[in-house]
Structures are given as C-alpha cells and as structure tokens.
Amino acid sequence: MNRRKEVRAMTIEALENAPPVAQLLSPLEYILTDHFRQRALCQALDELADSDALDTEQAAAALDFLKTEFSPHVIDEEEDLFPLLRRRAEPADDIEEVLGELSLEHATDRDEAELVIGELSSAIEANGSGFPSPKFAELLHRFAANERRHLIVENAIVMPLARARLTADDLRNLGRRMAARRGIDYPETPNAD
Ligand SMILES: [Fe+2]
Ligand SMILES: [Fe+2]
Image (tube, rainbow, N blue to C red; front, top):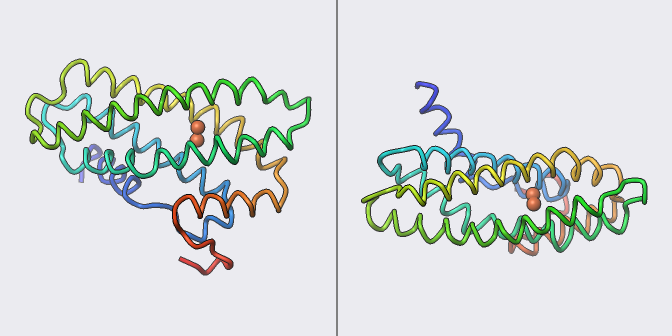
C-alpha cells in the first residue's frame, strides 16, 4: 500500500470507529480520542478539497462523523468540561479568556459544519459531479485549518489543566453525562465494551 492509500485507510478507520465504551470511565481520554478523530476529519476534508474526483467512501465517512459525532463533542465541552474547569480552576490558571475564545470558535465551527454537511451530502447525491467547486474547496480547507488550530489549544492548554484540576467525582459525572448524551449505558467496570 502506498503512503497516500495508507493515510486514507487510517483516516477512514478513525472516522468510523467510536472510542470503546469503557473509555467513558476516563472521560478525558475519550475526549482526546475524539480529538484524534477530528484530526482525521481535517485530513479527510483537506484531501477531498484537493481531489479532482469525489472519493465517495472517504466523503461518506467524513459526512457521517460530522453528522453524528461533531455536535455531541462540542456539547461535552460547552456544557460539561468547560463549566467544570471554570469551577475548579484557580485564579493563576488564567483560563477564562482561552475558554471564551474556544466557545466563540465552537459557534462558528458549528455553522460551518452545517454548510459542509449540506454540500457534502449534495456532492454524494450528485455522484461527485462538479466536485469540488472552488468555493467548496475553500470552505473545506478553512474548516480544517480552523479546527486544527482549535485542537492544538484544547490539547495543549485545556486538557492538561482538566487533568490537573478535575476531581474523581467530576470525572465520573463528566463520563456519565457523555454516556447519556450518546445514548450509551455508563460502564460501571472497565470490562464493558
Ligand atoms: Fe474538543
Ligand atoms: Fe472544542
């Protein structure tokens, strides 16, 4: 398999496979896995934007991820992780401005994700005819670039602080809320799958 095919296969695999249910017992790990999958999404969107024929399998994997996984992740952060961090952070952590910026980006990303979902669905329905228009290619690249920057800040600043400040109870509550949001029974033991 050449490098390009290998990356494509890894990207599709990451997009199609949700983290194991037992990872909800370590919800910060679950969020980091989601971030890894979002990187795969960015890779797929950049490749789709640069291609001259629609890769239907890759497009469908990206579309499905955007439709089903993107929104719960943003809600995990907005409704659970960020409020917990605000409660537990110490003044010297100086996290408020970073969280404020990330929340603004969530709002923009959500709007742009809707646009990408609409355009990708139409492209798949049209069997890739005329795909991608220069405007859509620009949107895909912009979305991927914004998302990558966002992930860097979350992984470098937010996640280490969460690891340092959240209590065992916070983590259990976070995991339970994330499970409920996805319609998954919260695993009481690490052997759940
Ligand atoms: Fe995130
Ligand atoms: Fe985020």
